[in-house]
Image 1 (tube, rainbow, N blue to C red):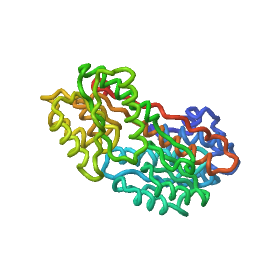
Image 2 (image 1 turned 60 degrees about the vertical axis):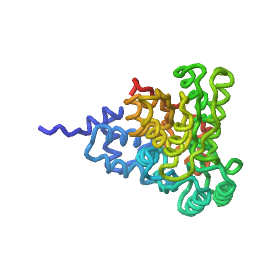
Image 3 (image 1 turned 180 degrees about the vertical axis):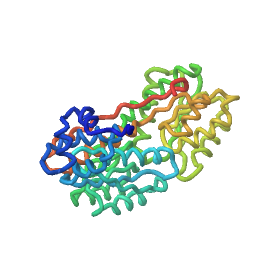
Image 4 (image 1 turned 60 degrees about the horizontal axis):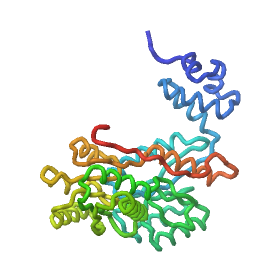
Length: 343
């Protein structure tokens, strides 16, 4: 006997009648979009054999929404995690047929970021990017918005005055969270350091500000060294942190507020058993998860990528579709905090 889900199973899961399911399948009689979407969601959930057909029925009359997204280097763990989350958010976007076009920047070069933004003109309905805060980038954002294409800043703000909204974490607050963990896990008089991946990342700058502010307020005994800025390019952060650790043998804690967290992990891993150095980084990747398990990293402050991508498509739809009031004020995302014993 076949265990394939039946129309009755689908109707029960969707909370509708079998007659309604039949109308969705046949397409002969109109069904409210909300009801059709409910049937489609249920069909996918239970593995109903005609889920693809229902999907075509649901989306046949919906407007298309193409969102372009500029991410960091394709090799980086965070960019790799973003791609499937963006594709899932596009597929699940309400009221539109979603599509995503992804481009990757090789580093932090403002001219490259501006070129990638310009290249999306005419290809997408909305654009989002993780980009440096630089006049060249702002000019590219202005050019795109003047064409009627809304632009969203992801994770690190840029293009203020022209971009539509910022979607991401409260970066200054995240810097305070990092400082708190370093304060409670290191000796009271021990020196600490912050490393970033460049001077033009607004998010990293705010994280550093939050870290310094917290330490001044709540941990005056800790000495914070000068900011360490890693140059752009593969291996730069690992080399910068390696030089820092060699020059500062008394360092007890390090906050990687930006740049290549995986490079910082590699440098700290080389000295951690002897030094007991505490480390806080951003974004949960295969490398940072393994470092947590090995107690090389003490805290990972992670962006909830699925929520980020869903918020992007909701806000893009609200910005592009006339009279659509569903996607309104962005709000800041709730961070995910990962400790060694919580993974």
